[in-house]
Length: 250
Image 1 (cartoon, rainbow, N blue to C red):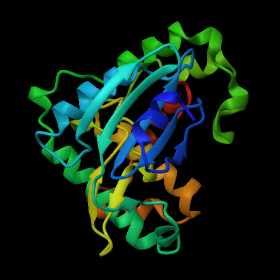
Image 2: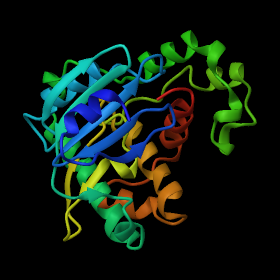
Image 3: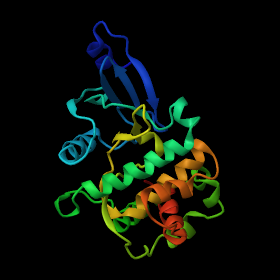
Image 4: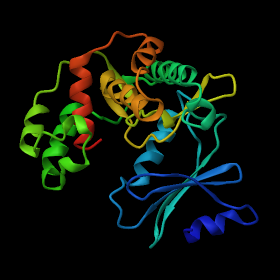
């Protein structure tokens, strides 16, 4: 338990509610959530998410930032709770149609609400391609999805060199996997969390990963219902491109 989380807890018992693959942990402390990144991790600075949340909060339901800081142990961000439970809670994993419908509708609502012309952040394919090249020595196909493990690093970099033409530029979520959409008890989406990569990009940068995450969280057969709820036809070429780009570094 990080010391800062224990200090915030007072009489409340902190509960770890999410652990990501790079060692970050989110704790629930009463009606607040504390997102924690240990010092020395490869996680992006939480200050970047703080800025994005404060910008996005003017247009769409996201957690209100209550505090942010760092010490020798790591960095933390404190947010207020939003209504609802994430879309991979036990109830929604047992009812995937409701869940993926909410994820698709919520993503469309997010894309419609956030103004591209006023967004100071980018998540463009070109920027991400350049980042992948800078990080090429760190890339390891063994950590990629099975769809991509037959590629070596040079082949993967070559495959992402020319992004497809933009279908529709929107302010993307940046990590649109199903757990980052919240649902209320009636099955409606109520907000989004985990916005550290938010920025302007083609909407398929989000849609490719959102549909992909239905396989991980609900099983086969739920990609098309999510796209139907969003209101768009499948785009296999853009989906394949943005899934590979995701594997090379979100």
